Amino acid sequence: MTEPELDAPGPAAAPPLVLDAGFRARHAELALGYGGGGDPDDPAQVQAMQMVLHIPKAEPPLRSAVLEAAAASAVALCLDPRVGPGGEWESRYLAWKRSRIRKVARRARGAQWISAGDVDGITIDVGGAQARALVPGPVGEVDPRIRKLQIGGTDLEPDEPGPPDPESPVLWVNSALGMTVGKAAAQVGHASMLLAGALPVEQVFAWAEQGFRCAVRDAEPDRWARLCARVNGGAGPETIAAVRDAGFTEVAPGSMTVIAVAP
Image (cartoon, rainbow, N blue to C red):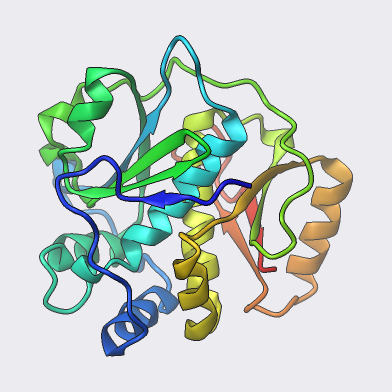
């Protein structure tokens, strides 16, 4: 598996990660979970993280690699120094994380992708597949360069990336749901956040030093049943995290979409 690369493109490189009080505070916030607040009365003030997937028309990337980049970019943003106490992104990040959390995945190519790199966020590259998680905000105030990007209409065929790296987390996607690449990108982004919040801070920092490298694999029915049994049987919360979708798009409310397993 190719080592991910952080923050390319983008207006500025991410500050270096250090296992200090700041990193511990950001991890502690993530460990609290998310949500708890209802939606605002004004629909335009609903909070969402926009995620941009680089899907060129001529040579589209592997689906599994795009999803790995999406998962890594989401958790990387949540642990970036700029979302922590006193950081320039703190207020926007916390307004989203402490509300009813949403992610919206959009596709970009060519000049669109270059423009997306100028909007505040974190880009991850996995073997040439790229995804950028943007600093969250109200859906009514999405940057015009992002708002014009298509949400649906482009998908990628399933691929066979081979056995996952035993030293990396694996995000198992419920293949029976038939999620589009955009929907799956949002779900694996939820899963990487949940897993990081469940793991001890030292282990998360070691993961951060690897660029939040992870594997995304489709779980066929037999494997999915075994994973669900682990979740329902009370597997250690520090080793496994399950995403249950709110059902706003594509899947029924309460559907379990992704199960993340620590190495």
